[in-house]
Image (cartoon, rainbow, N blue to C red; front, side, top):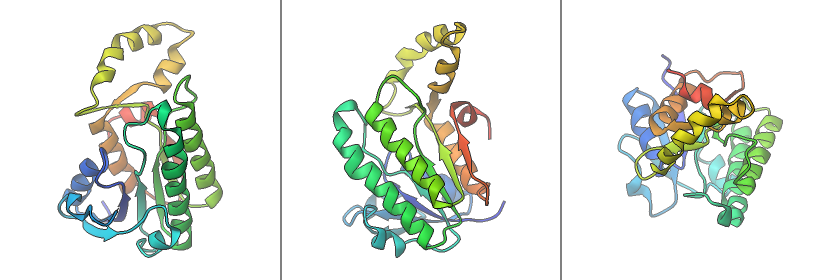
Length: 216
């Protein structure tokens, strides 16, 4: 395994604070970009970089050429009522980070998107589809990870949906959608992101729910 230089945005969030310790334990050099005042929330072992993910200039100063950028910034607990935040935070931050990574000649960009198409959360999905398009247009080698619901501490209500998924997967007319919009666990997400870092190269790829679930 090659030791990687990794920059994580959103490192104090739901996935980031589990991902960083795993990357550090595996020997990777991890830097975490956080807002001023949140430095003490970064998991131990990562270098803390105070910056603004919505500022291209700030991010350009944070990205090491050849490094892997893992972009996890997003509106906490997304819902249809937060459409404005998806535009002002999720979209702006992703676009500025992609532009900065391109300017700094980052080696690979890992982006957590969302499974689609889907009948709900259309504003959320629309923003992430636009970011995916921007990422492809940038020419950066990248990995796009597309979960739907992520089960974990504080996010266990989707367990109630499991019987419905069993039924939908059993019916030919709904099987494909039930697989595409399936539930993944926080552990599966972390393992997938670690795998994306450790296999990052010149190729770009998209990881859907079945790929996230696959043992790494």
